[in-house]
Image (cartoon, rainbow, N blue to C red; front, top):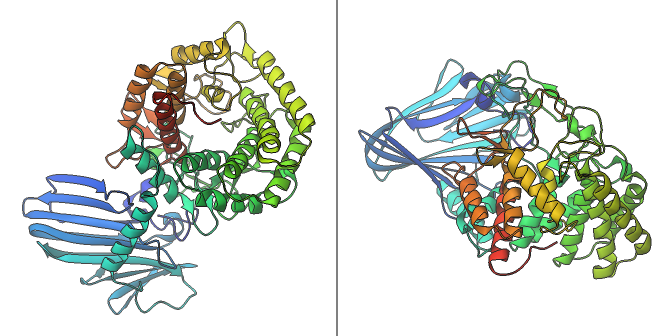
Amino acid sequence: MCLPRFDSPACFAALLGKPEHGHWLVRPASESTRIERRYREGTLVLETEHRTAAGAVRLVEFMDPGTPTPHLVRIVEGLDGEVAMHMQLVVRFDYGSVVPWARRSGKSRLYVGGPDSLRLHCEVPVHGENFTSVADFRVRAGERIPFVLAYQPSHEAPLAVPASRTPDEMLARTEATWRHWSQRCTYDGKWPEAVKRSLITLKALIYAPSGGIVAAPTSSLPEALGGVRNWDYRYCWLRDAAYTLYALLMTGYREEAAAWREWLLRAAAGRPQDLQIVYGLRGERRLLERELPWLPGYEGSRPVRIGNGASRQQQLDVYGEVMDMLYLTADFGVDHDVDAWDLQKSLMDFLQSNWNQPDHGIWEVRGPKRNFTHSRIMAWRAFSRAVRSVEDLGLEGPVERWRAIRDRIHADACSHGYNQQRGAFVQYYGGEELDASLLIIPLVGFLQANDPRMVSTVAAVGRELMREGLVMRYAEQSNPVDGLSPGEGAFLPVSFLYADKLVLQGRMAEADALIGRLHGLANDVGLLAEEYEPIRGRMLGNFPQALTHVALANTALTYTQAERGGHPAS
């Protein structure tokens, strides 16, 4: 749990370490014979029911979106009998490294460490024990015992109470806020519950004060257990955000697109060649990557990292995603912004001279730059969107020059990105390796799904990148292109992307089976990580992952449109 922002230092870091690195436990004192979890419909209010020999309790927990600082509320409800309960709060600021000063303040306990403070307010007696806070209490059927943990900067005067309303009022407000948002969803196709849960998850990954969208709310959950592929995803990738907003726009949400556009204009202000692939929540550019040696990592997966060195990489595909999203935002009726078009023209001025330069590619390789085919495809998409902005939206620009560059890139990618001997588009010019990111080609309109080159590419991916029915990003090698030791799970976003291609090629039964398999990988409350290890049956990577939930929603849209005889938006 990172407060007050997604990318703030964690006050609970046990996920990447041990219990003493910070956690908050509320559970029956005796063993639970059955535990069930669910989100309340249309909300992010989580319910966990414990059945014990003595009775049953329900734990209702949520974060109130209406408070000026973060408030985590947990309400223990007695359902049956009388159950002895145990609460343990271990606050460790700065990723588990700072033991706070704790003191009692009325019915509250205040924890202060450096710039941060937390206040626990509850009605049951709490006592200190080995630098932790502990409470033992009993709850009977019909009783409700709330706990509220509120954050505020330590230099500010503590609030008399942790919230302006009672916990039950906060719960009612939280439910109403989420249901008002989720009921605006216009999606009416197959798998509605999975799609709506994904959209709620995407909404929850938006940092509301700025409009920035984080890729995931966690850092350093490993892509291979015990491995080194452990990255901090608590930042705003332009690529992930663009795909997120596409899913939201297609299902009736425009306010988020307008807010993200304003965030982008602030974050990208400056020279077009300085456009980064990832920024901080308020547009920060320096995301210094460093390691936290005191944390042993999730199941021993080291190092634990914060910050992300990819912020200094050049990935030319991001110009295409930004142009794509700004075009769609305007096309979906969000009011035109002159500054946005000025930014787009500036990006095109840079890209027309640099589209053929090597870069680090979509997978953020830590090896040498290459001429990645995906980067060329998305450069083509950038000029395609620039042309359509003039043709469809009536904006002013050098459209003839943009058309010529667009066509030149298309010819270049078809000539050098398609390997005749392999019968497939390959990862980089002159290479032979497949890359599942190239399954995006039909979705961006570069080629039709039934083009022979695309058909053979999809077939090659199915033959060579499938592991236990799921798709890898690229083949594992002893000297992989990403410059890291091999070893990772199947990549869930490209597995959904493969299902997209099956749909577009009319292979609906195969697509249906794969989509159903992917949905079945979600945990008990419908959330998905970035990757999956099919042999061990475990999710891998940061969690929940925006790109995976985007892919789920967008694949469902593609399937529904095809089932009804339509075509996906391009």
